[in-house]
Structures are given as C-alpha cells and as structure tokens.
Image 1 (cartoon, rainbow, N blue to C red):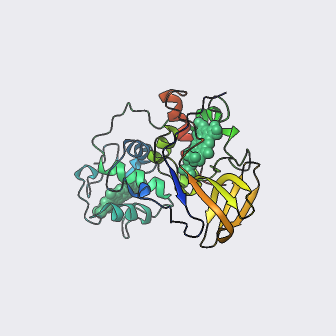
Image 2: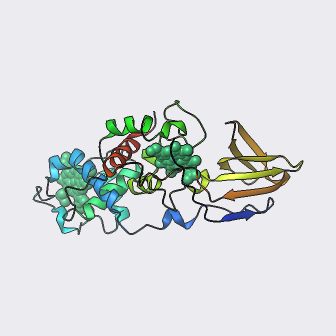
Image 3: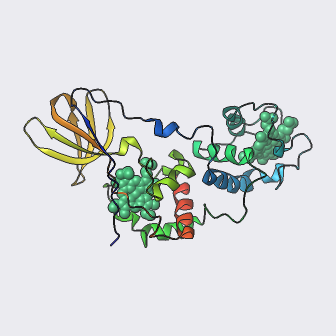
Length: 261
Ligand code: HEC
Ligand code: HEC
C-alpha cells in the first residue's frame, strides 16, 4: 500500500448560511508566466502540428520567424492563443480544435522556442503512463477514468482538457495549489446532527452536491446545515518520491491524453 502523505494546511470554517465563494487566486496565480512543464508539452504539440510549416527551429517560413517572438497579429498571449486556435484568415494556417490546456502549452512554447532543453523529460509516454496509473501508482484505486474505477476521487476522464500540463504536474507532486477548489473534501453536519464526510462535486446558491464516503451522491440544502466545512486536507498522495521522474513524466503524458470519451 502507498504511504499517504496528508497535507494539513488549515481548516476553513464556513458558516452554513454564508458559504464563501471558493474559487481562489490559485487558478490565476500563474498567469503571465510560462511554466517549464507547459513549455515542454507545447514542444511536443509543436512537433506534431506545427513543424510541417514552421520547421523545427520555427524559421522555415519566409514570412514569419517564430524565434522573433514579435508577431504582427499577436500582441498578447491571448491573441497568440486565439490565432493558433482559429488560424489566420488568408494564410495556410487553419483553425484546429485545441483544448485550453494545449493552447496554454503552445503559447508557452512559441514564446520560448529558442530555450527548451531537448533532454528534459517532463512529458513522457502515455502508454507507459497508463500502465503505471493502473499498476505501481495505484491511481485507479481512487480515480475513475472512462467509466472504470471508484468515485472517491475526481473523475479524470477529461482532465487533460481541463488542466494545463503544469497544473497536472503539481497535482502529482502533491504541491499546495494542486487541489482544485471545487474538489475539496468537506464535512457537513445536518440539522439533526448527522455528520457527512465527502468530496464536493458542485454547488449553487442554495445547495451543495457531494459524494460521501460510501460513494453515494448527495445533495444538501445549505440553509438546513448546522455546519459546512471545507477541509484543506488532501487524500491525493504525493508522487514526488514514490515514482521516478521518468514514471511521473509518463503518467503526465497519460493524463494529458485524457480528453473525454
Ligand atoms: C499549414 C501550415 C501551417 C501550420 C500547420 C501552422 N502554421 Fe502558423 N503560420 C502559417 C502561415 C502561412 C503563417 C502566416 C505567415 C504570414 O504572416 O503571412 C503563420 C503564422 C503563425 C504565427 C504568427 C502569428 C501572427 O501574429 O502573425 C504564429 C505565432 C504561428 N503561425 C504559430 C503556429 C503554431 C504554434 C502552429 C501549430 C499549432 C502553427 N503555427 C501551425 C502556417 C502554418
Ligand atoms: C488515496 C486516493 C488517491 C490516489 C491513490 C490518487 N489520488 Fe489523485 N486525487 C485524490 C483526491 C481525493 C483528489 C482530489 C483533490 C485533492 O484532495 O487534492 C485527487 C486529485 C487528483 C488530481 C487533480 C484533479 C483536478 O481536478 O485537477 C489529479 C490530476 C490526480 N489526482 C491524479 C492522480 C494520479 C495520476 C494518481 C496516481 C499516480 C493519483 N491521482 C492517485 C485521491 C487519490
């Protein structure tokens, strides 16, 4: 069995009546910076999708050298991402259905095209990663993928489209900030004193939906709760030591390949 490293950071006590919004600055903390894992994932995508026209070094087209980092139609990263996704009208570059995570990675790579270490291994082999997911990593004892596995932890079937490579790597390292706020473990006490421990799936103004410890889906009316606590603990083990760098890279490649059915 894996040793679970519990990260107990702090308890956020939230009164039942006034549930504070929990979407935090975490998700925005990295805007404007390029993370190495995204750059490396972007390099891989570039070699699959862009290299035919722009060349290995980004300088194959006479009209535009990607190493210049100044692009006439892309003053910002947002514009650059939109141009990569939508293509450039009137040129050979056509629209392609990239996920947000892929756009983040492609932008990060294009902005750093000259400076990537070719020996870096942040993103490995998805097929090997799948084997580790089911085997050594024991991920499938908690996570569900494509209808297989328990509901104790977030369903990862679409995780490659939802999270960037860098966010996924942080999850594997058990880093603070790896936890997506909506998935936090919660403790609720109903008006009659029943204690429910579970994981939050969703919430709106009046209700909150959980999966409890017995994997039941429950919807609770917030106004009728005596207590509702978001826990800052996580049951997600850190794989910083239990997997090697290569193995984590393979698992990351597998996670990035999960983009829904
Ligand atoms: C079919 C060929 C083709 C493919 C594939 C292609 N491009 Fe382009 N790209 C072009 C052409 C042509 C231009 C426009 C050159 C010009 O300015 O006339 C261009 C322009 C660009 C620009 C400049 C945008 C600007 O603001 O002017 C960027 C950045 C870029 N491509 C990145 C990419 C990336 C990243 C990919 C892969 C996801 C990609 N391209 C795939 C042909 C291609
Ligand atoms: C003991 C149960 C458990 C195991 C084993 C486990 N996880 Fe998790 N994982 C969780 C829980 C619970 C969460 C929810 C978030 C949290 O609590 O941090 C989570 C969160 C995640 C997330 C973030 C999901 C999101 O929405 O961003 C990813 C990615 C992930 N796990 C991947 C893995 C991988 C890959 C493995 C195996 C190498 C693994 N997990 C093993 C319990 C587990």
